[in-house]
Amino acid sequence: MLQARNNYRFAQVILIILAAINIARGLFHYLAPDSGSHIVAGMDISAASGANIVYLLAVIGALQFVNGLLFLYIALRQKGLTLAAFWYVLLTSAMVLPLNFVFKQPAAPVPGRFANVLEFAVALVTICLIIYFEKKSARDGKSKNSEGGVGKQ
Image (cartoon, rainbow, N blue to C red):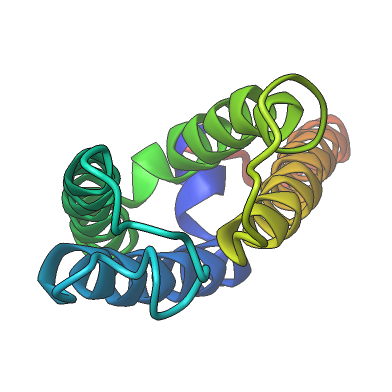
């Protein structure tokens, strides 16, 4: 199965795209003077608690940046971890989605919340495709063995 995972370039390309998005978003939140709170989301950060919002968004940016670097490393150097990376994206976005739309909806129109929906969908579809192709590869390998063909080493 590990060998099958290494053959699915589509998943690695998608992971590189997710890496680039996370690196860009992370750097913006980390480096922007207001971490994007007012510039992008229109949040009022003039109150005393505004500094906390800026700080928390900068921390999120640091985490996004590191996630992006990790995804890039997996896609380019540790291809066998590609499926695990997509499970990570799926689970983290699945935890954030209820916060965004049900339990703790933001007062300001936060653009990143819709990106979480897209991340969830992309991760789910990619996981399903990887599993489908792995099962198909396993079936094809069994049929080659039963027909007297050369099996996987």
